[in-house]
Image 1 (cartoon, rainbow, N blue to C red):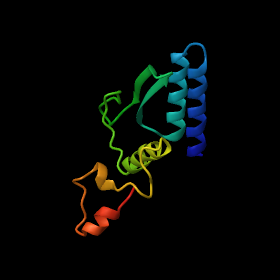
Image 2 (image 1 turned 30 degrees about the vertical axis):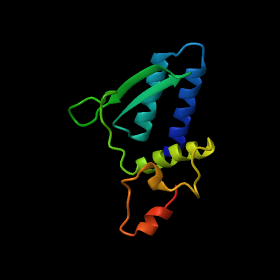
Image 3 (image 1 turned 30 degrees about the horizontal axis):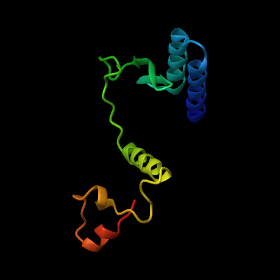
Image 4 (image 1 turned 120 degrees about the horizontal axis):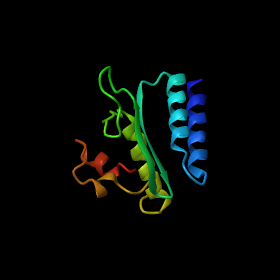
Length: 124
């Protein structure tokens, strides 16, 4: 149910951005409905269209006293691994690095294991 609500919201946001003009009140209402359905206390949304920021706003609360704003720092925990893998994947697609042959320490020389052979053989 949660995943379905998230996907529906993302598709709604995509449709709103693709329209001739962004209907910000409708967008806010869609976000607030999704937050209510999913039990999300607070979040920030940024919408880009053709590499231009067209909407950025915080919704709800970050804790019991403070509002959630576009400046609220959100800990993302283990998601950094997914972001890094995606970025490296883009570099692989562009032919700038290779998953199997580009050693990590070529770009991060300070990255070292105790075993120098492992360090030299670790690839992206």
